[in-house]
Structures are given as structure tokens and as C-alpha cells.
Image (cartoon, rainbow, N blue to C red; front, side):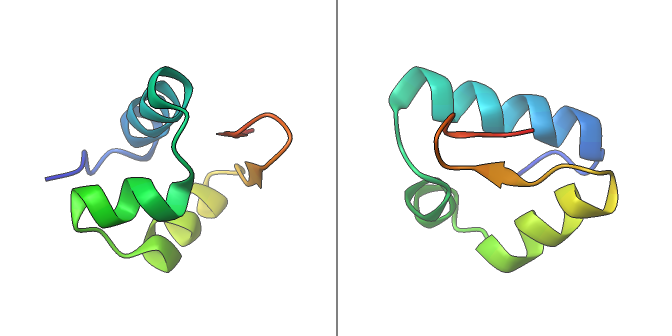
Length: 57
């Protein structure tokens, strides 16, 4: 289960992306999470995915 707090979620997702090199799509598949919901939750607190950096910034 993913963290519910958006800032903890951000840290968790970015750590996984950085350490594994996976994309948000693969991350969500492995975590059985909805990618659109993840992006929406992080966008609500001002973060969007930057593919060049492979993280939410």
C-alpha cells in the first residue's frame, strides 16, 4: 500500500524511481496502483513528472 500523505508519497516514489530506474508506469504496475491517481495526488501538491530527471519535481 502506498503512503497516503502526499509528501511521504513523493519521497517514496522518487526514491523508488531513482534507485531502480523504473518509470512511473512500471512503478504503478509493480505497486498495483493507478498511475493517473498517483499523478493527480502529486499534482495537487505541486509536483509533476519530469522524464528527463525521472522524478516528480
